[in-house]
Image 1 (cartoon, one colour):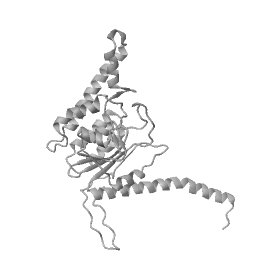
Image 2 (cartoon, one colour):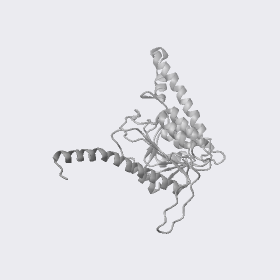
Image 3 (tube, rainbow, N blue to C red):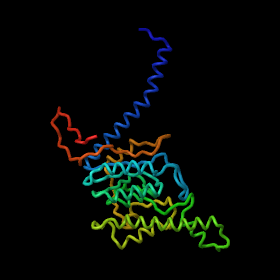
Length: 297
């Protein structure tokens, strides 16, 4: 059979159009396989909350990608599908996001009966830190950071709005600013109340010393530093948070499967099926396939 130039052109065009689809399928399959392997190693449910495509910020101006209601819907479903005696491992890479979505996820985590561990390979700022506070254990890369959880109203920190009102005479302040100040005061009180709920939810394990709870709340919620201030492992430990440094290599391998992209939406991924607790598998003789998970769709 003879091919002319136009036939070769169409073949090339078809192959070029199918290549991105094939590459997407391959990386999706590798992600699922990596999740399965990590779950088998940890005998847990693994949930990823990864926000890529970060943009630089200055003094707390919000980043372009953040925790949304869609994220909370998917994570809440993953938690519901997890048996109560199966631990949850949450891998976080996020600048934060909506308070409503963050609180929904955090409440679901603290209500899960089994152990909840949060892994932070690079950063979990603002709402990400709030999710970390809901965990029984926080495991971070030695160079990873958390961040303050003080509320932001628009592009302004609530604490800074209150400070402006305190420093000026009331008759020199506009009604809009007074309303913003009232909202700021309420926002700070609400966040402090919720963080206190997270920190005190460790009875009887006492992951955080009771005498340190109020100092942690003061440091994280009152705007003592800028909203993008990086809280290192050492500083978080000194505050009294249950931090340990040193991530397994498989966490970094997973992160490499979520490279910075030019488009798309934040990735929340888990194996979407209810299943019984995974048990460590014994090596099989050569020539025999490993047994499949006993999960049911």
